[in-house]
Length: 197
Image (cartoon, rainbow, N blue to C red; front, side):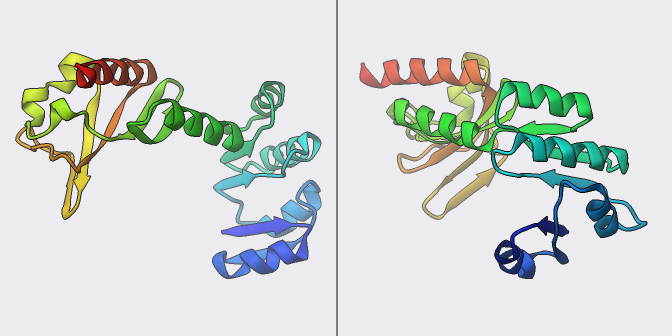
């Protein structure tokens, strides 16, 4: 892994964690070309704060240098469209995604953490409602009832990844669930209503 940044302090901090750390302007084609060398590069991550012009230039040069996968941080929907036109493989919004995840966790107290995987697909870490306690996954039929899948169950001295149908949910367990965002929200609404009865 190679890091490029104009700030010498940043490069000194990141240096121990990468193969090579270079002080330079990542918006200049000659700098990127010199760092990449003749061997090319498989993946590049462009994260230049709020400077749209800088990330656009870096993306343009990386695409011209035939970098296979270019992941770029965007600051707006318009910025994202420009980056996609230039050939960015993936455009991310770290601040917005973090804010959305936090907002969801605040609104839904049983949600511990949320991660949007792709488009409308997400993974959520939840506290199981009381109606789930001491029941097997098979009896809960979450895929059939809610359209979601439990991919892990963990608690004190317990970790079951891809849990089987006989996995019993204990009161102190947490569930890692995958599904469409709307299905997860429906599940949260229905399970909350069931818990309040």
